[in-house]
Length: 173
Image (cartoon, rainbow, N blue to C red; front, side):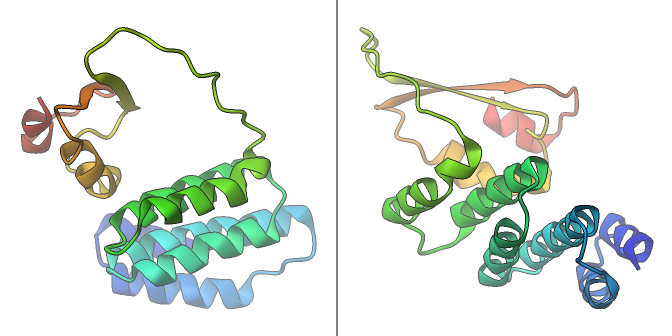
């Protein structure tokens, strides 16, 4: 079912991908750490599928399930990143929701914020690094963030790690 889901994903037939992933989840054992990792990867794929289908709340639940069942750092990073991206496209998500996410999951990531420094710039400079500054699902999730920043407050820089370019890339320039 996993190969079937991957094919449906590539074909952008997300309802069929969803059905294949749901069947697969029923069959996957979860006893050993490796089995839990496979199960977590399937849940991450399911979360992405929910997102493509516009079921953002279900997507968020799927990523949270991964966080609750695994101690694998790679899965945790992936699930938390996807959770944050999907929160970004949730229509009624607030700054407080993002702060709550950060507060809840920062211990998993073992990351301390950088110390605060003050510079003499007129605007805050923000740099985004991605291989997906084109018509890609990550860009769809990030579009509101990148395009709605107050240009009077922020100076935005996008650093692509990919040569892929299209109309979305041109609009970002």
